[in-house]
Image 1: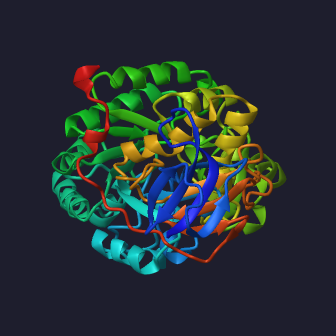
Image 2: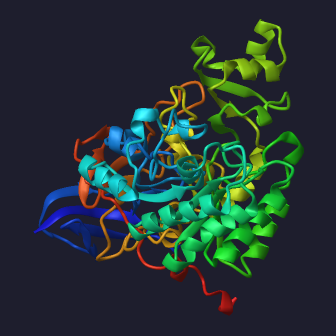
Length: 489
C-alpha cells in the first residue's frame, strides 16, 4: 500500500518538457510510481483533476539562515510551494561566525547578535537537524562572515595571512557539506576586498567541486566590469559562478540587460555560468547611502533610531525634516529599505533568459518585508507565465526546480521521477497567484493546494499541517558535473 496517491493530475516534471497526465504514488518519502494506477491502494488519495503537480520549488537565493532554526515552520516559503531553501547568499551567512559585537551591516539582516551561535559550520548543520525545519536546507558560506571572523575592521583589504585563515575556515565548511562561497562585494563590509583577496579565498572551492555565487560589486553603471570580475574569480578557482539577483539598477542603467545577458552568454562559452533573479522591479536591503537618489522611490521598512518612520517614503521623511535625502538617510540608519530601482522590461528580459533560475531574496526578519518573501514563486506561475505569457508553464517550473537542482547539485530533487525524493507542490494553474503586495506583504499565495516535503504532507489548502520533514542537504559531489560539457559547445 502506498502512503499517498495523487490521481489524474497534470505533471510538470521539472525538465521543461511537455506535461503528461498521470497518477503519482508516494511511499517512504520517495516517488514510488508514475503512470496509470487505477485502484492502487493508498492511505491517502488526492484527486488531481484540474490541478498541476510539480517538483517542490527550490529557492536558490534566501536569507533564511537563522530562521530555519528560530522559526522552523517556514510558512513564508512553504505556503508558496517552496520545499528547499539555499541560505548563505550575498556574502552573509549564519556560520561559521564568531562575533565580537553586534553583527555588521548587512549581516544584521539575518538576525541579532544572539542569533549567531554557530562558530563552526558543523555546529550549524547540527542545529538545523535538531530544529527539523519544514523545508530542506542547503548552505553557502559568506565571505563577509569570514572577514568578520578574522579582521579587526572591514573597511580595508585583508592581508594574505587573514585570507589564508579565512580559507581554512571555508575548507572546513566545505568538508562538512557547504555548497560553496558567496560574496556581497557591493556592501561596505566587503567593498574594500580586492579581486586578489577573493581569488585567493575561492581557491578552496576547486578541491571540493563547489560553487561561487556573488552579489556583484556593482549592479549600476559598472555592472559589466563587476560581472567580468566575477567571471575572473570563478575562472581562477575553476568552478561555476552564479550571479545573484541579476539586474540593471538605477534609472541611468535601464535597458542594459541586453548587453548584460550577452556578457553572461559570452562567458558561458568558456566557463560554467548562471544567474538568479526575483520577479519584481524593486529590490530590498539595508538602507545604503550609495543608493540614495531622487531617480526612484525608496520606501523605509524599518529604522532603529526612528521606528515611527517605517512604511514611509524617504522623500516624504526628508521633506518633513527639511533636509536632503542623504541627510535623512543618515539619520535613519541603521534601517531597511525597498528601492524601486528597476525597469519592468529588464526584469522580464532577465527572468525569461534560459540561464536564469528563480530566487526570492526575501528578508524574513524585516518587519515590513518586500512581497517577494511570500509571493515570488506563485508570481512567476500566475503573473508572468499565465497572465503575461512570458514563457510556458513548463518552462516556468523548470526555472524553479530542475534547473536549480542541477546548478546546486541537489541530487534526486527538482524533478518528478520515480525514485526521487517526494518534494512536490500541487497547484491550480488557473488561480495560482501571489497575494502579497508592497502595502500588505504578509499574505499567503492563492492556488497552492498542497505541498509535500520528503513525502510528508506539510501544507494543505491554505494551512500548514504542522508536520516538519525538511532535512539538511549537504553538497553532493562535484557540482561542475551537473553543468553542460563546455568541450561540446
